[in-house]
Length: 368
Image 1 (spheres, one colour):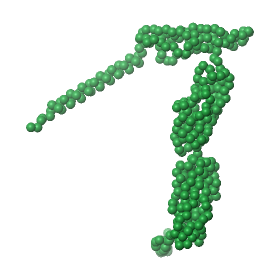
Image 2 (cartoon, helix red, strand yellow; image 1 turned 90 degrees about the vertical axis):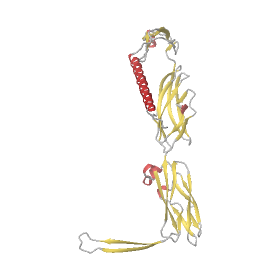
Image 3 (cartoon, rainbow, N blue to C red; image 1 turned 30 degrees about the horizontal axis):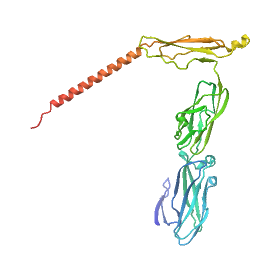
Image 4 (cartoon, helix red, strand yellow; image 1 turned 90 degrees about the horizontal axis):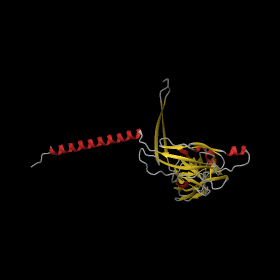
């Protein structure tokens, strides 16, 4: 309760009329009914989840007053106060329950109530009997969805040998303002998700790169889905398809180990490539079953393959020889020389540092 006085001066631009001073006086009084918290902040709220709080009203008057909560019509599907009508006893308080369930349609229905950072502000008024002015308060919350999206609608692994694994990269993005724990559960037994076996945490707005690995054990088409499940029990599925095949060309051993080899020396090993296709009657069918191969050696590897290309008829087997002859490359020599020079400079710096320390010690004169 206070007394306020303010003065205003009214003037005309051309100066034809002298300025007029207007004095305004007012007395402020406390309303009988008031809200304990003017702004109820619900922090971060996810859509389709229930959040609750209490609205506490106090009555200063010496008589009981009837009250009614009024919520803007666009927000009535998302927020509610129970009970909406009540009586606040004299010199007492009244507690109502605030229920907030932001549906997925809230972003469209209540667009004008949103601010920066998806901050929703809900203006609620309390009408009091025999009180001209309503009692306003605000309920605010950062409303966020819980969607996770994949970089592709479908993963097509193509033809997958039953003897090998095929990897397919993909990524997933968290569109939520909160971190989300996730895991790929109930995937087929011939599928694995990496890294961490498909478990992890997605930070707000983060895009995480993953890899699906398929090892088809059965011939034929495989149509399946991998499902990402979050900690709030939401499920996001990614369709996949693969075809299990037996390769017509087969190598006799998938791994070849060479013994330790000195520079300038040579080691040799060999393996066989076979065409497992069965020969059939008719030259055209046999022509189709002929398979060609090309062995590519990575750059910088002192390995030669002979032959590196060829064509095998159905049932044919070919011996391939590998020759490993390590050599000292120019880059290795330059790197070794630079490392030796660096070590020499470090030794020289350390020697000078010790000499300087010795000179300083000898310059000290002991006090008697």
